[in-house]
Structure formats: C-alpha cells, structure tokens
Image 1 (cartoon, rainbow, N blue to C red):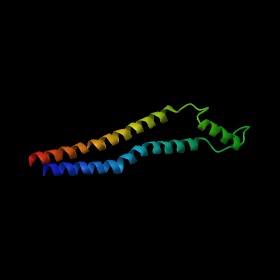
Image 2 (tube, one colour):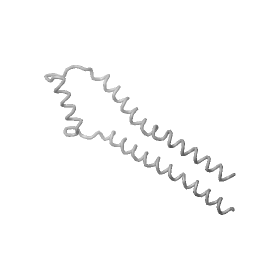
Image 3 (spheres, rainbow, N blue to C red):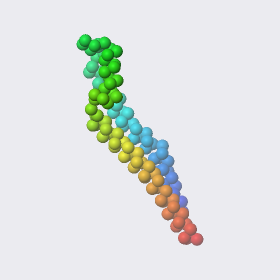
Image 4 (spheres, one colour):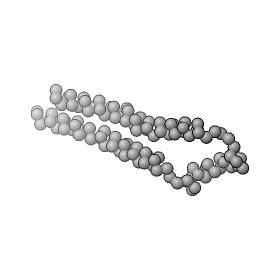
Amino acid sequence: FFANSWVRLVTKFRHLIITYASLFLFAIPILSQISSAMMGSSSSPATEPAGETFAEAAADEVTAASGRNMPADLTTMNMMGMMQWGIILQFAIYFLTYAVDLCMAACMVTER
C-alpha cells in the first residue's frame, strides 16, 4: 500500500508538470511583452515622423530589429535566460520523479 500511494502521488505530480509548468513559464514573458506593448502604444501616437515617410520609418525599424543598430535589451535577455533555466529545471524535476518509481519497484522486489 505504501509503495502504491507514493507512485500515485508522483504520477499526479508529473501530470501537473507536463500540463501546467510550460504554460506558467511561457506566460510570464508573454504577459510582460503584452503589458509593455500596451504601455508603449499609449504613449506614442501613430503620427508620421518629421521629415520621413512611414516606409522609411518602417525600414529603420527593420534595420534596428535585425540587431545592427540596436543594443540588446538586458531585461529581455535576463528574462529569456531565466526562462531557459526554468525549462531545464522543469525537465530535471520531471525525470527525477522517476527515481521514486524505481525505488518503490526495488522495494517491492526485495519484500518478496
């Protein structure tokens, strides 16, 4: 009975990790991007820049987005790094829970 309850508990925990952990990890940066876009769009109206057409302004944005003229945003880089480590931790915890299954199986074999 003891082994069965531990295996059941760990199986439910693995199911929660698979179902919700990735959603949680990806929701934080997505919500951050949405909130910064909403805050940024309200402060800058869509008017034509002085002395430059919309096509020229769009070309400048593409050039800046390609990374040639724009320095990296450290907050975004840190968030991406934390998200990557979170995903690694998620997989590590998920696969470490199989140790309980193996331990309980070994205990059941030695009891017989």
